[in-house]
Amino acid sequence: MSSQSPARVRFAPSPTGHLHIGGARTALFNWLIARQTGGAFILRIEDTDTARNVEGADQQIMEDLRWLGLQWDEGIGVGGPNGPYYQSQRLDYYQSVVKRLLDGGNAYYAFDTAEELEDMRAAAEAQKKAFIYPRPASFPDENDVRKSRQAGRPVVVRFKAAGEDVTVHDEVMGDVTIAASELDDFIIRKADGMPTYHLANVADDAAMGVTFVLRGQEFLSQTPRHIALQRALGFSTPRYAHMPLTMDMKGRKLSKRDGAVEVFAFRQAGYLPEALVNFIALLGWSPGQDREKMTLQEMVDLFSVDRIGRTNAKFDRDKLIAFNTDAMATAGEERLAAAFDDYLAVNPDLRISRARLDAPARRTLLRINKGLRTFVDVEYKCGFIYEADENIGYDPDAVKKVLAKGDNAGYHMLELLLPKLESVDIWTAESVESLIKQICEELSANMGKVAQPIRVAVSGSTISPPIGETLALLGREKSLKRIRQCLAARA
Image (cartoon, rainbow, N blue to C red; front, side, top):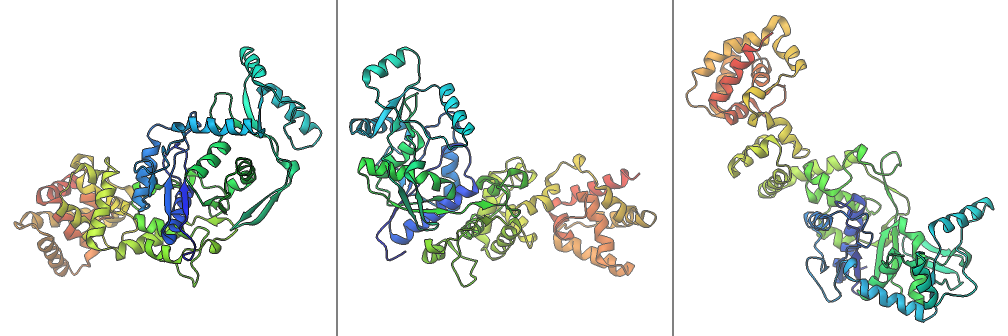
């Protein structure tokens, strides 16, 4: 696509919450097209459906996009020559477009109540026919509009379908033709005066100079209506491409029941944005040559719409974990530290977050936790360090397998170790681990037999960083206190 003229693309979400993973893919692919062609990536908020709007969701969407590294060139927060970029602030413009259609004979008023429309649909269903709105023999004038409003009837504006087939030249799905008989006179302005999605979408794309519309397959069935509106208004028709859906591994719609589905949830779950973006890029698109690992710039260089598949993509969470594990292993120290700081910032209730650690302490946590899958592993392995001593609970399985096994062998080991640990004056990871190794030699015991009872005593489980690092982070007094506490709690 790099040989093409600069493309003006847009991402136009509704402000109903954080950015969904499907929306993130749409934003990414549009961003790649803009960057590859030297065009513009526009962010527009489609907020005319006020009943569904969530306060602050626009800010959440912007934050999600920025976290992914997808900065826009025009739109909310940055401005541009074609604003405003909130549809709710463009109502006068939509009214002028509706008036243009009315004046040109391409639209008309209608006054049907919800009950009347339901009766029409029921009659069509009884005849086993698809419901097509029946165009009136004559069209209402302004006097009829006034009378209908006075009578309390809803007044909408319907587009007058041109009675011709419409073909969508889709660059992913191929040509899709809708017969004239399937295109009815759809509503373009609702009874409350707000434009419908169809009218606002087409009007804004034209006003903002959008030349390429890349969006999800669920919008393909609506595209013939958009093309019909463009023809009636004399607007240029942009290039269209509709991506297949993203499903779970069983072919079902992605659901929160199965895990995170929003970008912010993955951020809170400790993923690196570069790993998530890399993974999202491969949902329905392939760069070829079995290549998978890419930076954003490499995606820009390799992206091609003609390599987007037609079959639904599957969201493989295990593969995402593998991507993130690799990204964490190869990230530089400063990059990983910055990402960890962000993880703590968006998870203020974690034990590690509440500890308000300084930068060196946070970096120590990263250094001693090798093979991270996500930053959640740090909280899982180290959160106990920052828990109040009295709140340490003991995993029953850990107690059974490590402390109570073999006639309380683990407890006896703690009784043996405690005075030796109390004698350590210089408490560092190296000095403590050296002592434990010395005890292992004296007892002809392996490291696990000596270290695991200590680990369970101070953490409550068998999971922690290396024992020397663990005790050093806890400090001398807390380490000894927890060992004594564990012995005192022995059943």
